[in-house]
Image (cartoon, helix red, strand yellow):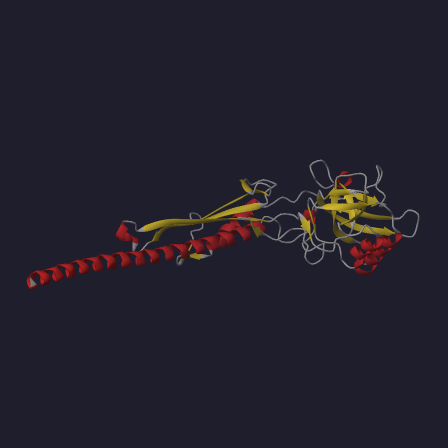
Length: 336
C-alpha cells in the first residue's frame, strides 16, 4: 500500500513539473511578446511625431514666410516647397534609432482640406491649404516574435496639417461690416485695390454699416467700447451679427481718435467682416473677412464717412485684428 502511495506522489510530482515548465514557457513567451509590442508602440510613436512635424512645417511652407507679398496678383500656395519642406523635416526625425529615408521613408502631398466633411482632397492646385505626410519604417525588428515565425514588421503613420487664411479673427475688431457686393465677386474674390466710401446708412447706394455681436446692445456706447476698449468679441465665418444703420458722430469720433493717435492719421490696415446684404438693421451671418486700409475718417460734416482701400487677406501680414489673438494667415494646425 505504501508503495502505491509513493508511486502516486512521484507521478503527481512529475505532472506538476511539466505544468510548471509549460507555464514558464507561456509566461516567458508573453513577456517577450509584450517587449516586442512595447517596441512597436515606441516606433509607431516616433513615426507619428515625424509625420506631425513634417506636416506642420509643410503646411506653413505653402505660403511665403514674409507677408505681405507686393503683388497685384493672387498669392498662390507653393505646393512644391511645401512638399520639400515636409519631407526634409520628417526625414530629420530619428525613428528606431536612425533617420527616415528622404524618399521611401516619407511621402508628402498637398491638397485641400474640406472643413465640412473633414476629408483631404489631394492636389497641387491654387486652392491647396493643407498637406498630408506619411512616414514609414519597414522591417522593424521583432526580437522575440521570431519564436512565432514573425521576425519583422512594417509600420507607418499619417498626419494632415492645414494653414489657411482666417475663418475667424480675434477679439478687438473694428465694428464696421461691408456688403459682399462691394467687397467681393460672386466667387468670393476680393476687389483688390477698390476704394470704398461708407456712410453707415446702407441702402442700394451705400456699402457698409455698424455691427454688434448679440447679446451686446445695439447702441452707440457698445460700438464705442468696441473701438476704444477692444471689446468686440472674436468673430468667425457663419457667426450671426446684428447690423446697424446710422452715421453716429460719436462712434466716428472714436474711430477718428484711434486713427489719429495710434495710426498716424495716414493709414490703418484692419480686417473687417463681410455680409451678404444691401440693407442693414437686422441679423446676418458673416460671409467672410476682408482687409480694409483706411485712409480717411470724417465725423464733423454732413458727409460723415470712412474711406479705405480693399486688400486681399493674402497681402496682409500676420497678427492683424482682432487684437493679439487674431491673425490673417492662421498658424498651421493638425487636423488629423
